[in-house]
Length: 101
Image (cartoon, rainbow, N blue to C red; front, side, top):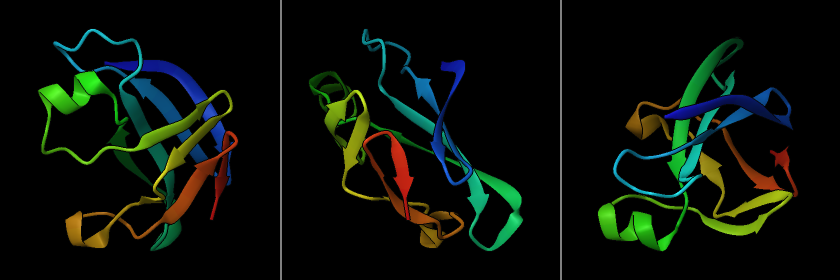
């Protein structure tokens, strides 16, 4: 489930809080809408999960991002919309609640 309230990270990158069915935590990750790195006139979507114990237990093989800070949100490692996995190539960091390319 996605929270419809957007989080504006700047540079056209918008995040939406997500939950995962069957995992009882209020915020499991982000759906991320962003400019397509191949064609900035288009938009692309991706997502990520936070490295939380509940997610690691339920989804041990999933890629996960460590939450360095919740407010403002900072994640590690960087976020890469990997073309090898159908992504657009966008790469950057969510640091202090902002998108840093």
